[in-house]
Image 1: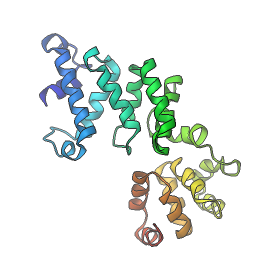
Image 2: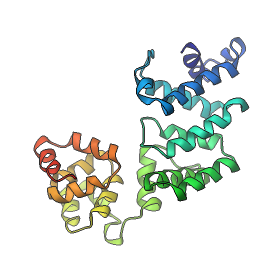
Image 3: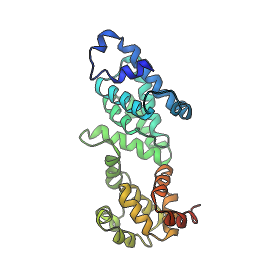
Image 4: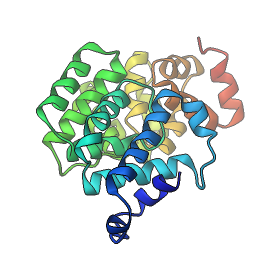
Length: 242
């Protein structure tokens, strides 16, 4: 654990490079990331000095800034590809920035395979990372992901293409426009928005429509949306969730 914390301090304390072996620190940091991938429950409960997600972000940011020794680069690429194929976890977007640092023909080939062979969430995430490698000027965080979903990943039907703007300003109008829209399209709209506007829209939708849309969304995003709804609205929606 001491090595993981020391690794996170390398960018701001370069003297550590001379005092501690950078390769040993990098190996400890990769082991920390790998333990989340293989046993996330134990990883979350570990005796960390800070939140494990804070440490995870620090480790990934450090690798992104400094690169990775050859001894751990292959494992990091495995973790990048693996992150596209699982339910999204806190700070996973840092892997997408690391993909830019560790870009290689092999990594791109594996991402292209994931973009065609996985379930839809895997395909979308893999396509997003490939797109980020081609467009280094774009953000890798949730805002960048939602913008990409609207424009590249799952473009909305023409009649809904500008609903994101309407939703930000007039949730009631957006909810009315979604009446009669197929549930997969409603789900696509909700996933492409920030939480606040999306929750306001869900609260105004017919509960049956809202339940169908949430059932088609990423499970974590759907659960977070339900938790943030006012209790009466959440209860009405839950009556119709499969």
